[in-house]
Image (cartoon, rainbow, N blue to C red; front, side, top):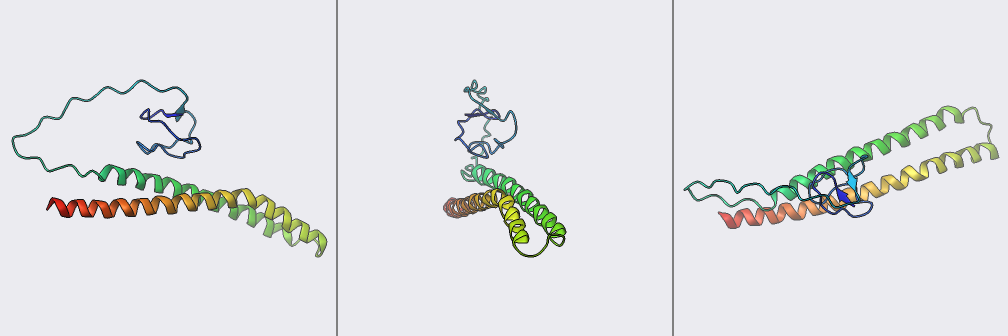
Length: 149
């Protein structure tokens, strides 16, 4: 699979492009054929002054922050979905007689929550991994900046 935004190879099941951070879950955001490479931009004109070295971590940090925002939004949607399921159960549970029938009714709610709960746990794990990666990059960026001074 390839990202339709930048043409970078995407891992199966990935939510975002590792190269440009574009979402891969939207329809049309992936292609199964490698797109032609984008045109190479002309090199920037350099001034006579010595240019400050470009921060090698800045773009990666931006991409991870963007991915984190998308995953946190997805997590909010899953939490909202789970809240709606629980709300419907709580509204109607009072009308179900006590005993075995109510126990079975509770099991139905648990089954309906099983998929969203797994999705929630996966999103939380991805968020934690990205936050650890972001922290590592920010630490490397600080070391790099200290070396530049």
